[in-house]
Image (cartoon, rainbow, N blue to C red; front, side, top):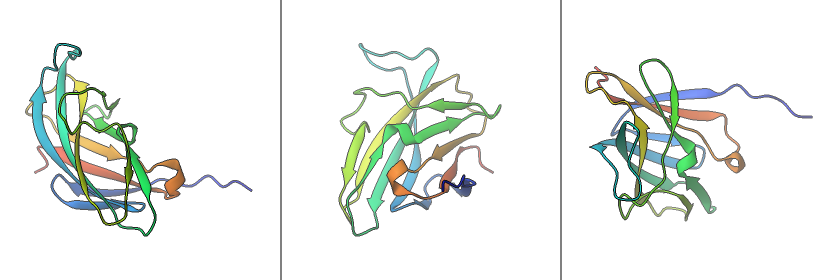
Length: 140
């Protein structure tokens, strides 16, 4: 029997540790950029830093597809993949107890005065209903 689970949002602010499934995350605001020769944004790339640590006993994965940015109009935007830094997150295995540091970015009309939030969804195989909601900018 399949049961539909209600998403459980866990809220925090950038720079704070938050746990989704077997992974402990710290997300930071890394500024904006205009891409590179291969990929330029329609608007502005907003970059985040991601530290991810597997706190379980078994290997797990993380991917850029788990991350979304939410603007003041509550619109969700998916991450944009590229090679903007040596640490750009695509799809990655996470060994127990070994943290990794990655970045990803979102193409949005960025306004310095607005509040933005990051959503981190679990991978399907991580079987948790927890979803992180992290205030990124102008949280006060």
